[in-house]
Amino acid sequence: MRVLIADKFEPSGREHLAALGCDVVYQPGTKDDALVKAIEQHKPDVLVVRSTKVTQPMLAAGALKLVVRAGAGYNTIDVAAASSRGIYVSNCPGKNSIAVAELAFALILALDRRVADNVISLRKGEWNKEQFSKARGLYGRTLGLIGVGQIGSEMLPRAHAFGMPVVAWSRSLTPERAEALGIKHRAKAAEVARDADIVSVHLALNKDTKGMLNASFFSGMREGAYFINTARGELVDQAALAAALKDRKLRVGLDVFANEPAGGTGPFSDAIGQDPSVYGTHHIGASTEQAQEAIAAETVRIIQTFKETGKVPNVVNLARRTPATHMLVVRHLDRPGVLAGILDALRTAEINVQEMENTVFEGAQAAVARINLDKAPPPQVLDECKAGNSNIIELSLLPIQKA
Image (tube, rainbow, N blue to C red; front, side, top):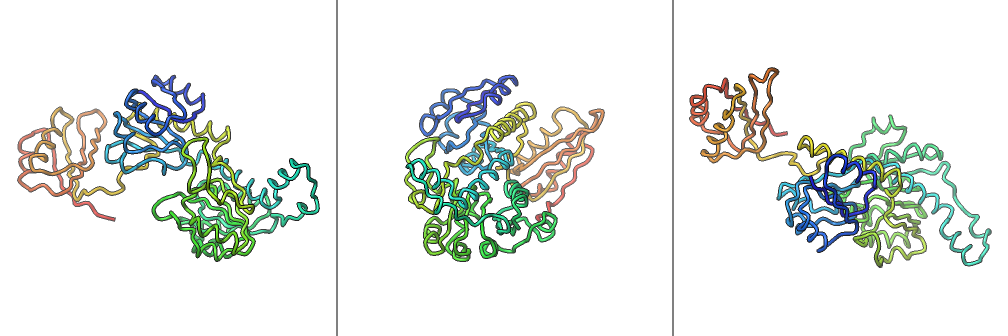
């Protein structure tokens, strides 16, 4: 199996892939047309990326079977194009949770103590203790979380250590789970904005969350509150945030921006990064040695499992629901050609197979196949299948109940 790695990747991960017998092509920094050509040239089975965008021309360039995002998200990958070509897309959720939570708190503390401004002033040869000795402190301040997934959950012990009560909203958070976590549940994100001194965002980016932190959200925040985003820049209505910096006198810590350079370096022109009320970092939330080692190990596990079993851990682009309407259950003797005859009859009847599995019983004498179909076969097709093969013990057709 050939693996093309197009971004920086830990040496330990590359060594483990080689030890598994993979042919590893390591070309960090390869992107855009150069990555299309690299895929055409090397014809990898697996493509590993971090921040590099994976586009339709790249997916069409060779014979890719799997794309692994060595990170938590996958919004930089054209998942629809991959799905249309039968290419698995996988990622490494949760492996950078601690690192991102640490940066979120670093930004909170830096805003409160104006750390960056202190450093800049000292480097200019200025001493201004009178100005910089003013800080609110975190103890007793309410932290509001938008999202309580793996990263949001890592914020909780850190908040408790600082003596900060927590209010939170998440799509999956229930009042019962909030109580078990020692936090206060809020029914809407706007209620978190209303009740928190510091709001920290930890949501995945998708069609439902894109731009959800809008003018209405920011207008509900307390005047002078802190806003932290270490998740995705596209979650935020940038114009609304820029207006809230002035109207609500927010102080803001951002590790992510709506218009980031595609690679590790490049010009950055987002005006919000120049605002004196904003402390920005370079999308480095996951960039600790601990996190990168964990992500490398998870990437290796995904590729090893795929290589050895054909299955893909953490796959993100399998259909949650297929067009299947019926399941054909075939109890049969474990003999060659049994299922081939069934499939040939279905093809002749122009019935499409959506999913299929065949389970063999102990001793390998008998098996049960479950075949999901896009419509019910006519009774005569089933009769012909059973009559034409003595190795079929029983055929059953079941309607699939839609949730």
